[in-house]
Image (cartoon, rainbow, N blue to C red; front, side, top):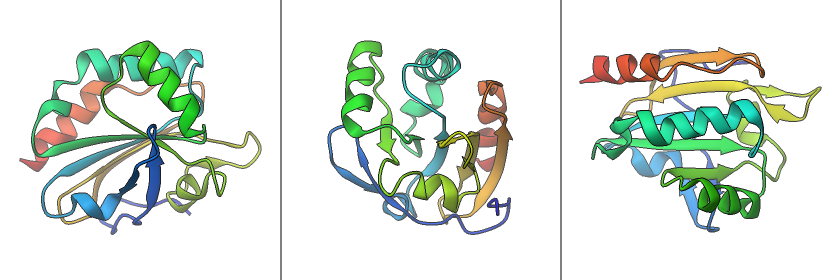
Length: 153
């Protein structure tokens, strides 16, 4: 069952690419969160999306916005990918239990064993204010994220 707009976002704790724990609730009261699920590091469409986040998403530098990207890859894979591509945003490993956070958000593909392309914009109170879920082969548009964030201001 997918998380819907207007609902409280499920809290979670995942390790980042350096093994540090990150919780969604840690941003409550201070930051709007752009939560981006993607299938796998180093894959074509995922690389394009993450490079676009790096190059074309200046909102990530705002003090009131946190970009969290999530895949089922291990933290070691994410760290290697982040170093190679110069990703400075937070990359989280939904590695074990495999895909548990993606499942909680309703964006885990059981057949493929990976997350679909789900994005959730969560306001400072922890409520989902916007979402999009695309099939695995279909990239998302960053302009849509930017518009949704602008509406929160």
